[in-house]
Image 1: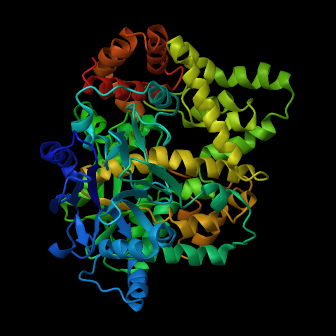
Image 2: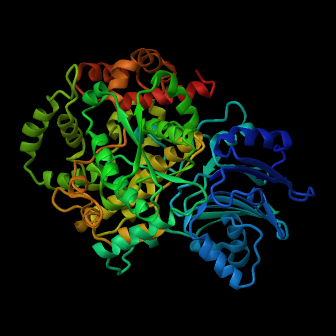
Image 3: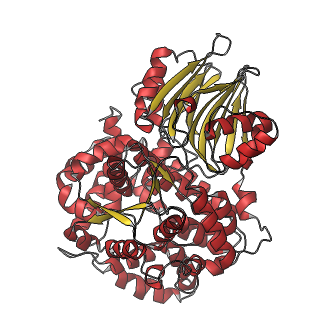
Length: 635
């Protein structure tokens, strides 16, 4: 795992600029740093690298990696590099290191873009071909590793994080307001958008080649529509799923440093922890806990007791990290870390647990992220199936009995949150909508009418654009399977745009690598060969994954109520951040500039404090967005 940066035929990027770009992402690779400049001015290529040593710890594997006319800077891990190395050696290739970096370079030399389909791993890389004078950027199948780029002067500049491009973009790069609207609608920014105008995220499963004449060629090597949404004719049952999961976890254990896991005590993390421990008895586990008063107000499940029980049963060393930060002090640092305005407080959890692991000497952790998206594990998935049945009820019953009754329910008292009431209010907000709109509304902060009320009218067309984009992705999903349409949309949008994005930024800020064995091309192929009817059975979500897990886990963990990798937002908003909310949300730049409606924001804050509605997520997003704006020098 590392950080990469560079420029090709961009006159503004000189030695000073490339040094500043490298320094901006130094946290991604504290073990070594390197730069490479083309020996002549014909192409003006500058490449930089920050290394976090995981495979082949020797200096010989440092980057930029130069060999026989190819120069590579690479972020990530290729889990099947040993198999590829063996194949390449048989074909006559010689190697001077034991690194996956050199295997990647030689795989490209032999197979070109076709090599990308052969890779199993997470990666973002830039490769310069001195003979052809071309620069190629590539990103893994699902966008686990980030890669930002901007076209300049007929060339291109790139970096692993947006802050790595800031020395080139200047102090106040123009903001893309569609991305700002998206951050309010979703509380994150979809992969098709970037918060700065003229900067792009290389699409997942794609490669971009830039030639000496400035011509750009963007190609997909992994098309989710063909790979996931179209019927494959493959039948995947419980036994095959078990085999695929075992194989993926084993592949993700390839490293020359110790590996630990996140262990929440839930199904996903418990399963991968046990599978990892079967391969490596030296696995440590890290879990989070919260202050009792925070858990009570948030109505959080007791994850810690399950994590302790599993660790005890399997003789695993469990490290407990209490999430009780000075959130008012930490919030601005997290906003800077995340680059774009992402309003999911789980990023704080990820950062603090990675920081604790790194302080203990751990560089690599496994995460259960991705299982919910692939196997229908979110509450919204079941809720949208339930909504399909709810819409069959007579309108008079829905509109004049059920909805008014639910809307009168309080969501919290002075000391305790009411989780069922929050869920019911959330359900009523989208249950009457058509299928795709209901799914979008099930995990967004506002419906279209609310956004029109909240936002400056000049931004309304951007709302409609985002709604249409969501509908287009949803329509690509399997035509005859509602559950897998939701899983497909989550894999394309929610997983890449939110969960993978904050996990990468938060973990790399602590100079650690997080691997995600569920977000694997073999696991995904198996998951989408399973019908939705086997993923959600009655009220049971992830049903087939739970059946598979019974081979290794006790039923009390397999079938326990689902917890959330979240943070005690209600407690923070009501207690720790009261002054910040008043200063920065009620009276900040967003409301004084007219970007958002002052009265609507005031009403949200007041309703949340009275317990009439749970608006903590919306308030948190507005707070993070306000802090982000101020960090851009726009207060």
